Image (cartoon, rainbow, N blue to C red; front, side, top):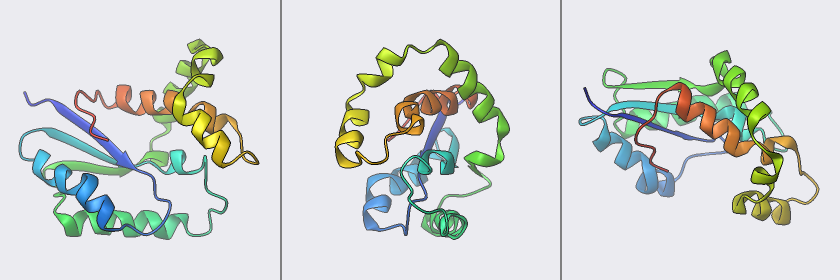
Length: 145
């Protein structure tokens, strides 16, 4: 049985060549060797979005871009994170056993706080817990970022 790949993108705006060259191109090649699960991580996007006005359109456009780039729904699972309630259920369970001191030491959290001191919220602190829930729920063995 092939190993499971799990990866995703935050729908925070229009896709660009960097998204393609940095990840999506690799995703296309991985789907021939692995059992691939690609997720639009819209819950993650809520941690930094100042407005959700364009979120639905950005999700739609992102999936279209992935399909146009060669992600094949016959070979890969493509879905929207918020459409699966078990993600938040597992996130809640993990958040109950994860020490806050661990999360406060995460370098990316510290960077986000410096960049957005007006928007420090649990979503930023708990981001790694949500990532862990995503990976664990879908049994990701290979997690390209």
